[in-house]
Picture (spheres, rainbow, N blue to C red):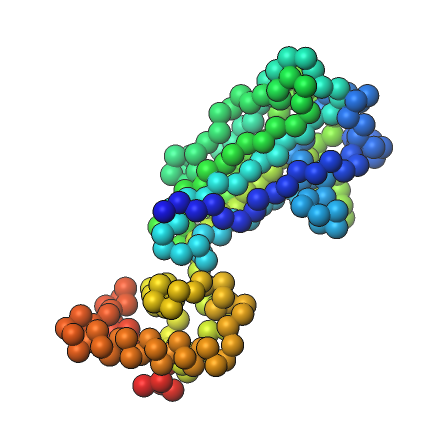
Length: 254
């Protein structure tokens, strides 16, 4: 089962910032190209300007095998009456994710279509086992070409923080942390396998255990799961953790 998760960014037409701290006027400024989230406050006017996106498969459930997010590109200047090519490249020297393994690399030549001043790229991220232990990053760049320049590549937002306009970083991981409301006394030691089994049997989600579950429900979950594990053992099908130990719940529900 394929699921799209997180980070669906909605491109809204807000006021533009220019390369010289003026407004980026779409119809009377030069042809420059940028990643839209660094220029627009997305998805809300109060949202910070960003040059990164973080994607986690951790709470997606065991069935999710990939995720598609969107990269938004915007150009300044007037729309043209023909398609205009631009270059979208992966910075392989700085990226740690591997094309074809951790993501499907977009075509290096993309187009701002006739009559348009923006483009949307679908980036497909691939869930892999090594993401359970490591974070990966993909760094995209928009180099100048015959159609578009980089009139401004970045601006300093503080003495040490730079907001990039033509460089965009996507972080992806599958590292699963213990849900915030997981209580060991009822649910036992946290493991990835146990979490997904709880979600499967009790028709819930990891995010519910992380942010919403009540103590009463935690107690119920622990008791229910321990009865299930006991019955599986009686039936000759004990449930084991990935390390070979028997799965058990917490001491308060034994």
